[in-house]
Image (cartoon, rainbow, N blue to C red; front, top):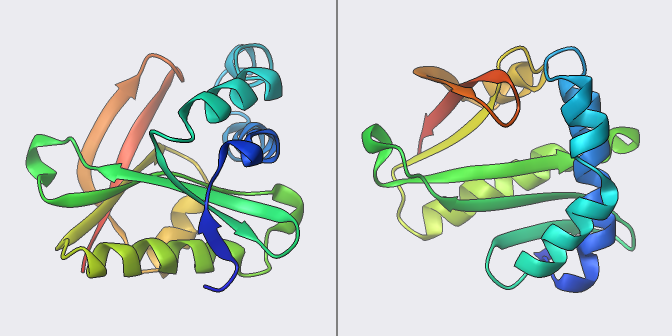
Length: 162
């Protein structure tokens, strides 16, 4: 966990690259190309992360190079009150397989435990291959499903008891 630190506005460009290319890698064939390649751009995401750096709770994996990031928030779902939500987690696709995602997810879970949350949850597009990773880490589909107009895809919720 030594390589995980709070996200700052100065990280916005690199975080935006990871977000955009991570989404393209994970959601190709699930989310429309219109969204992945026209609506979500590195420029737009850089502005977003720069503008929201002080208002979102985000962390980066930085060992001299930012290789991944996560953001978290309170879960707003009626049936998951009292849960901490992993809002975003992305690792640069070129860095997959090196344990960075596992370290970020462990950091998220440790944060939840330190704050006395009894549940954690996350939403992702149905069909995202990362579902296998979450299942290996003890998460399970909990029946939460909704259609995201923004992504044009069905989202499914995974959760885990702490």
